[in-house]
Amino acid sequence: MILSEFSKFLQKHNEEIIKNKTTLSLLTAWVLSILEKPAQTNVEKVIHQEIDFYQNKAGDFFLVAKSESGRKLTKALYNYALSYEQHLMRKWLEDKKPKDFKNN
Image (cartoon, rainbow, N blue to C red):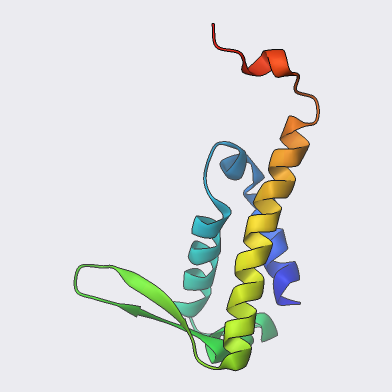
């Protein structure tokens, strides 16, 4: 359910990923957008329950899993983000030939 929602979010940002934006930065943006507002859907409620973020005065932040299930969720989201990026790269490379990568 959560991976499905994250997948929809990534699909909306395919062009950004192809243009070199990482899926991990999009994952972070997606989780933060959920954590910064009150939870309305079941997906948002689970993320609020399982993941938290902390920010210092300089604006740096990090995400923290609140429990073992939160760690599993965070790891699943992380792995999914990486696999989605690899999937897009594979699709992009399908019609490419070695000569497309030669330096002039």
